[in-house]
Structure formats: structure tokens, C-alpha cells
Image 1 (tube, rainbow, N blue to C red):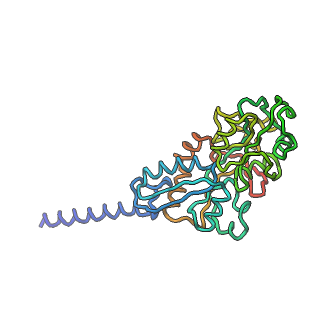
Image 2 (cartoon, one colour):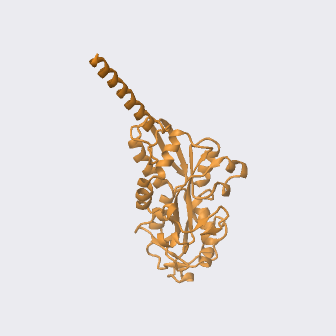
Image 3 (tube, rainbow, N blue to C red):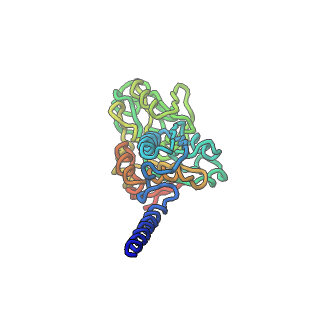
Length: 305
């Protein structure tokens, strides 16, 4: 009799422990851990295509590799092509995530933009950059306008040596170009005859480095000693000046989905906002966590604190 009671009690205890374990783990329908990232070896499966902004591409690419190492059931492909292309692709269902440096309503018509959900994962500053041999290290707003509209074609006219200015531009679909024109120039510009146009920020950096008299613009995440960063109105393009709003040429980095994301995509987006990424990859690659910003900006460019 005593053995029977002991056996029954053991069975009850086993079932109770099993139920408790189920309760503790069962709240994660999408396989995400309590900290927001998908659990390593979790049962979430799916394929994700993230396309668009080349300024955001290094962050998404690096984070996706780490995420896939922990989640073997999820495959992520990261492509560039520019913010406009990414937004169009996600709106038309050709991509899972549209990476963009600009708000969707700045690139798409209202109906298409309305169907997208905005996930802001970081902030990026954008700076004018020149070939290392160019002697100019500061440009005013008006000087930049004059250069990118073709009114000034020689560096001697803005305080440099007698050398032809070679513009290295991005296509009109580029979010980096849209941000630079909106917040550095204050106006849209036309493509000038003789200017070079490149689809990727990496190629812009390479050409500015190798081309005498070249000027372009890059996200801070691309900056290194191979190109020379130019101050804007005397203000250096660095994190603290962006955070407090002193340096105006910056943008949110958006990862748009068409409607609410599926389980795999949500797990990846949650991972993008995790402490590991926000305090690790974001900082390491030269971006700024959106949580650090002391100012906010809406789609019209209005600043608030």
C-alpha cells in the first residue's frame, strides 16, 4: 500500500513539473526569448529578404549573420539597391523587409505607405566627404548647394587649391541622397553632366578615395581614413552633435514590413532592438541607438524634444 501511494505521488509531481515547464516556455509563440531575440535553436522557421538602403545594409547584414547562427531555421538575405527600391519591393510583396533611410511617405504614394509598418532600429548621420588631397575641411550650406548645383566647379572658389571638383552622387532612389539634399542642401538637385552616379555607398567611398578633387556624401557607418570628412557649417559630423541636434544631417534607419510581421520576421526585428545589437553592433558600426536621441524628427522634418 505504501509503495502504491509513493508511486502515485511521484507521478503527480512529474506531471506538475511538466506543466510548470510548459507555462514558463509557452508564452513565446514566435520562438522569441524574453529579451526579445529568438531563442537559439528555437523552432521558428522562415525566409526573410531585407532589401533597400545601402546605408543600413552593414548593420542588417552583420546582425542577420549573428541571428542565423542562433536560429538555424531562419534564412535571411540582405540586399542593397537604395531606400526607394526597398520600399517599393516591400510594398509590392517582393521583399519581407524594406530598409530605408527615409519615411515611407517620402518615397511612396499615400496608399502604399499606409500599408507599411515602421520599425525604427537606429539613427545614422550623413556627412560630405572629399578626396584626402582636397584641402577644404569645412563647407557652408550655400557652398554645398553651389557645388551640387554646378555653380561652383573648382575648389579654389570655396577656399581650396586650384582643382576641378568631381561630384560623386547617388541615384534619386537613394535614401542617403534624399537625406543629404533635405537636411544639408535644403533642396533637390538635378544630375549634372560629368558627375558620377553610383548605386552603393561602398562604391561612392572607393571613388571619392581614388578620384582627384572628388566630393560625395556617406553615412557615418562608412567613414574611415580612406576619405576626408568635411564639417557642415563648422559642426563636426559626430555622435554627440547628432544626439543633441547640433548637427542636422541625420536620419532614422527604418525596417518596414507590409502589415504586421510574421513570426520569423518579428523575431529578427526584436533581435535588432535587443541590447546585444543596440549596444553592440549599432555602436561598433558607427550608428546611433534611436533611444539615445535627445531630439525627434517627423516625416516633414519637424524637430521636437
